[in-house]
Amino acid sequence: MTTLPRLLEAIGPLDDALAAEARRHLDNLTKPPGSLGRLEELAARLAVLRGGPPSVARPVVFTFAADHGVTAEGVSAYPQVVTVQMVENFLRGGAAINVLARQAGARVVVADFGVASPLGEREGLIACPIGPGTANMARGPAMSRAQAIGAIEAGAALAEDAMDAGADLLATGEMGIGNTTAASAITAAITGAPPEAVTGRGTGVDDATWRRKVEVVRRALAVNVPDPRDGLAVLAAVGGFEIAGLTGVVLAAAARRIPVVLDGFISGAAALVAAALAPHAPAAMFAAHRSAEPGHALALAHLGLAPYLELGMRLGEGTGAALFVHLARAAALVYREMATFKSAGVSGPA
Image (cartoon, rainbow, N blue to C red; front, side, top):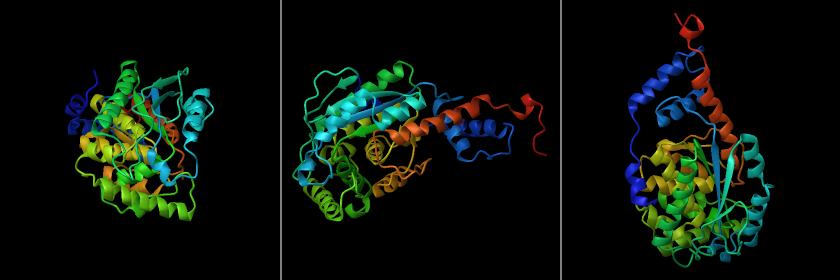
């Protein structure tokens, strides 16, 4: 059974000797040292994490959906019913994440972590709802501590099932109207940044709605006063069920030393919670891209992660993470398949 204490206990530091070994291997390949730029950095990180030549053959994208009570405060340009409608689109294979995952050869796992509208049994949908959406965080805690733990453990269990079946790279994605407000509050709580610095336009709100959204985040933090040193307290106070589920995916991957790719702002918020719970977890995290949401850059800086893509994306669903799969696969293949100077009979540097 997946338990949070077991996951946290399994997440420790990586071996520094592996980093030196990976660097030596890359420098012995038939190229000037460092000439593949950040692709080499990526290859080295993958090798260190996996403890040897990496492989990206069976990637899995987790797209978790849930609703947020804070939408009652008028923080989104879209109605809450869009969450359930988009889940149906995922299941039909018509969303952006379906298209990009197919192209990347990645399987998409769609799970209901707390969609307000009943979905019923659907082919391809994993049902593990914690509740019919969170409570309104502007008026009190979004969820109980027990619900936060339950959602983390449910997400971790799905990740462990995938890894048991051979997944060698996990990617995070989500859907939930109102979840950029929750991510903004988490980011402000953990990084200490002011609400106006971490709160963006989300679904494309106008100026008046953005100002209201900032004030809602400010109010949620004032009402709940979450302790930034306690990731569970932050998550319960101002998080979302899908964010908690993704926190579980991140922790499960870190515990198994499997790379976990962070998509955008919402995934970044989940990663902040994971890092607060397990300080060594960021070693397993790879920032696919930098979202257009302003809080995402602050979240990545707090985690010590540099994004690999800069495309101005802010869709979510796991779309940026799916694009990153191609880079990860290329880096792994370079590490595994390029000839060394010795094996190729090529003269090395003088």
